Length: 186
Length: 186
Image 1 (cartoon, chains in turn yellow, brown):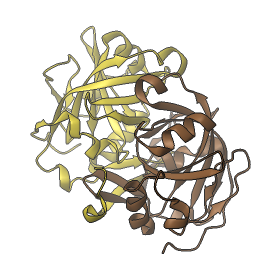
Image 2 (tube, chains in turn blue, cyan):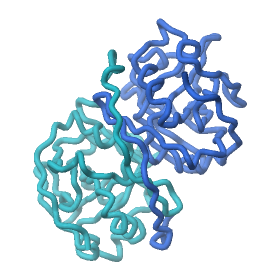
Image 3 (cartoon, chains in turn cyan, brown):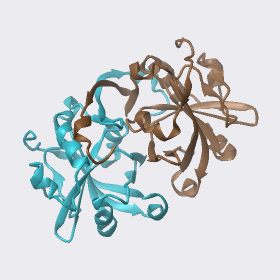
């Protein structure tokens, strides 16, 4: 069973690159017609600070694809490394067969700006509206705007998961600081 | 000074997600009209296995932007963590003022399918052609096809850099394996 849900506080949407630019594996939650689902996901990138844009390739083979396309919203949640088994199982089951929140003991927390639930056990959750869907047909590529961000006070202590394919994850490790060299850009 | 250049072998382009899905900070090299440049970059995502597509948001404020847009090609190179100071300095200087290969002691290695040079000191280099430029005007978003990949035999031992903003990098850490749980997807 996963650890208990984390309390989270509001976090500036323009600063979510602090988490997403590092390339973590995320859990995307969605809701459509009173059903919710979760998918494991790693093909996303920050695209802009303000508005806070994130681009994500969501394979059309996923049960979540039509739910997100129809609802035009989702929540991008970041699991810590202790949830690795849950993340792998979510990625290897389909919302067409199972209720993943119930099956994997995860807690639905209400979002503020979307119907899709936050995943309580994740340490960060970013509520997203679809911003531009013009590449969905050709590439399954969604451009989302993060409209509200929630982050645990303990986020800096969390190790994230970085999926490598073939059942292998790398955890985020040591932090190094080179502020003195950042004279031009952030 | 950086360490010596790495010998690299050809690597399957459909498998570059092994590196890029983990979200490393990369160095993008470009060439246009007999000038080359390098930029530090972290806003990219894998978009497809085959063809091997990568999407990258390249800010129009970068000297590299016009070189890549005009040449319709680049090389995505992955530095290991020992190059952190070089990466930070590359990200905080402009190719309009300095020749970054000369300034930072980096080795230009010839590519096979593009004019842009591989960066010898990086452990992986992916030669890219522009595949779809339709989102460049609105989002500075380039969709590249990786047409040839080169990876060092020692790549699995390398720690990658993951930029977090504010002069902070997280290094890639411990590897964990959950192959037994991957019954459905890779």
